[in-house]
Length: 117
Image (cartoon, one colour):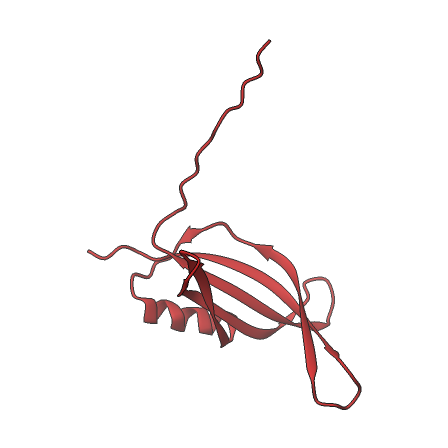
């Protein structure tokens, strides 16, 4: 049996600004709107997970990479983009969702620092 894939989703709103009027260069700025903890998906197949994420979050515009050992980078996820409606008005914005793939839930270590009295 294959293990299900875990993901973390980070939601951003994209704001575009012309660096100079009519020069064709667009500068993007992302504003973080929220994120989810690492959660288990129902998928064990990366391809099926990708198709499901595309359906929910729009087209894939980029891959995510993580530097390991200060030398190599590994692909760990994707960035998806779609037009989304604000929940409190009739306006729309461009939403990017950064999706990181994980093999399992993160492990947390608690360390106590006692005060000598």
